[in-house]
Amino acid sequence: MPDNRRYPQRPVLGIGALIFDRGRILLVERGREPLKGYWSLPGGVLEIGETLEQGIVREVREETGLEVEPLKMLEIFERIIRDSQGAPEYHYVLIDYICRVTGGSLRAADDASRVAWVPRRLLSAYQITTGTLPVIEKGFRQRRRH
Image 1 (spheres, rainbow, N blue to C red):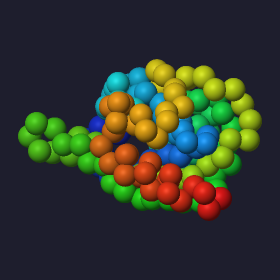
Image 2: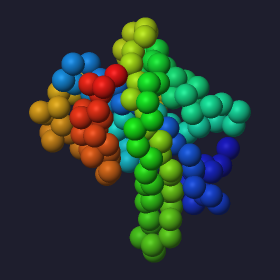
Image 3: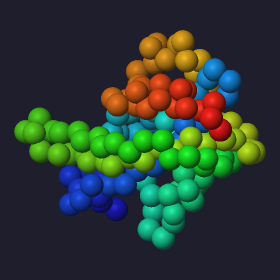
């Protein structure tokens, strides 16, 4: 099956989950390209026929083993990764939700090589995907409202 995410005809719709536990956030280490070895929010690509919320629940379950409930849409942003010639090799529109855990057991699965609850003060020690840290900080500021 060809990789329709690489050099796409249109931007790809991605979804992500900000899951907090006290002063920590759940991050996954990417096990595949693009950005293999980087840490990011659990999530992935929305599938045809599923709502944003259904996609987040599915992706979090697939990557982390956790069941979640999406509470609030937090951020929409683009990630465009260009090749050495400047052509858009990857183009994602990402929609991130604050979620709460409702069940499951934490484990790395699917395309995540590791999962970790990361204290806010240690985020700088992780190689986090570009644009994700400001979203995490915004989430920390707004999570107390839910």
